[in-house]
Image (cartoon, rainbow, N blue to C red):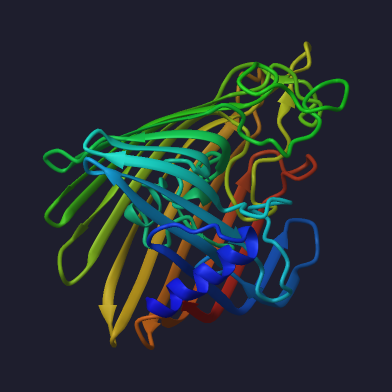
Length: 391
């Protein structure tokens, strides 16, 4: 810890001369391994890819965090976290051009609870300071790289939002309640207006996000419940025009530790989501439009069950999931997608900070309109392995 604090002070000094804060920590994760994927789309030859992959079991990150006591049991803190790809040294996709794309948070907390401001993860995800779903509801969280987690069969979840305000109550009798609001979910979306410019923060020309969640923990049991929505921009050039309605998601999940195994279960209902799924092509295709040019997303539901089992000094993991989605408010023969996923994995700690892992999954996407573009049945098998080191 002493060495980390000195290093953090040096980094801060490089950024801002005498800039200093109490209890500042430099931290990070680096994860590098390999992936083999076999994909088959109906009517096309199978494809095979073997690649060096990064950020599979844990997303690569480099960050600074710190807190300062300001009196009366109140403290102010910050988290600045960058994501990167260890195989080539570039920024990862979570951040786009942002230097702190994973998290850029300023917060204050005390007897009143916790209040945070900045860029961070949504409640239904597993990222950042506020992702209360993640590893609480699934043994693979939102996925080990492209090996699928619970959001493979859910509507669009596990996002990070700009301009996010989050309030977390004090924990009482095992309950903690969360509320989130994003005034402009993605400031890097540069063409939300017909002029090709970005819209105005907290106005109908940008996407705004709302979320309300609760977490309950008692003994071996943990339960998470979340309701969230995206208030889509009234006009978006990148998306075509605008959505006919806002999105709505209801997520419920949790785990129970039996000692010999930890059991996970979760489910989600989603309405007018912008997409469904995660595995590249195994995802809901472009949204459809009605005669007015209004866009319709996808309605549906998904559920997962999984387990962690201590084995040979490490932890074996297994999970199964199913999701169903269909076009929203489309007359006649709707486009539908059924997704099935099975995942197994194993992680072994070589030390307190270093682990090796391996995992594999099989995903089948069953579309009911195989003749249309991007809606042919698909099958994907992937195997990954690698090492994670935390510092």
